[in-house]
Length: 217
Image 1 (spheres, one colour):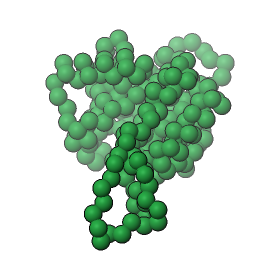
Image 2 (cartoon, rainbow, N blue to C red):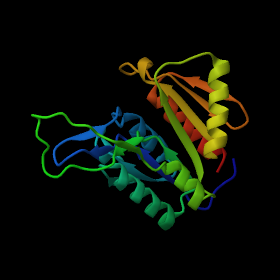
Image 3 (cartoon, one colour):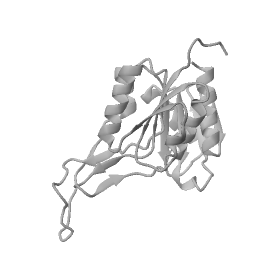
Image 4 (cartoon, rainbow, N blue to C red):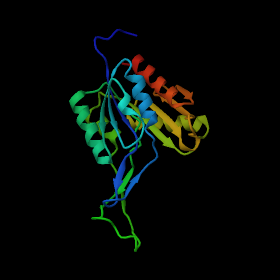
């Protein structure tokens, strides 16, 4: 590993995002933010971290060498990431946040009455990872995919290789919601050369990603 003159800058996204339906209701998705916290805690030991974090209870405020930007909605996370990529030109972007894939086409004014039915039209949200690829192609990316249930390793590898190519990412962390229980967090970490590593905890995922960054700066 070559000696560096200065620390790397790593952008990390973490936690869930929200999309408001009216002034008091919102859509969100599953994420405790704990995986993103563990990733930041591991990377900040040797490098500079900038974290864009959605609403969660993970203790990001305890991090020592991480600049923390709190956001709530998909739009806020997208804006913050684009701004930080332009301002800091990070070496890596570790995109562990659970960003909503859909948001309401129209937000209702005030609070919608609960006395009537409510038909919602949802539209796709912009993909932050695709925007980074388009506008900041030199930034190396660690992508994440949360699926429901694991399949055969052959199918997982085919799925991962396609995603790595489509997203121009260096690494894909593939994990499964049905298998995440307590401290157990099974995941497969795939690289573009077809190699993979299976790990079983959030701390192990964070450690693997940090070692990858240090070895591929």
